[in-house]
Image (cartoon, rainbow, N blue to C red; front, top):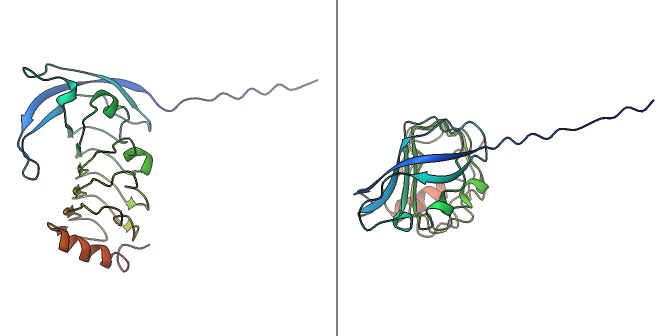
Length: 197
């Protein structure tokens, strides 16, 4: 008697449609920017969740090509979603503020090659791994304010020659905000001795 074993592979990713409030906003570190602010969104609890389209009313004389920023505030987002750049090809800024993100990886950011602004403040991120920003060398502003960071790879920021502002306040291993290139460079040197597990 032969035993037939069947393996079933289940995909842990899903796809969703988001609803945006399209608006112009003035950010203190980026002048006027046109953004998609999430109006409603189901929880993103699976890695690899794909955003397939965005609904909402664009402001006059604008469309998806004008959108430069994606902003999610106070949503239950456990993972960085995929597909945003396919919808908004000129995306340069990403904010997921007060989500539930615990871990981030290089493939999360590889999809954003033109990113200059990243704000993942008030999440649950613990580790910033090596080569996290390998494909994001345009980054100028990074914010990990109020996370649970206990480990930062010492060379994580080495390829970010445009990095001007780095906010790591209120984390387990570091509580600093650097608002100019000189202070960022000093901190990069300090990383060899701090935030190492």
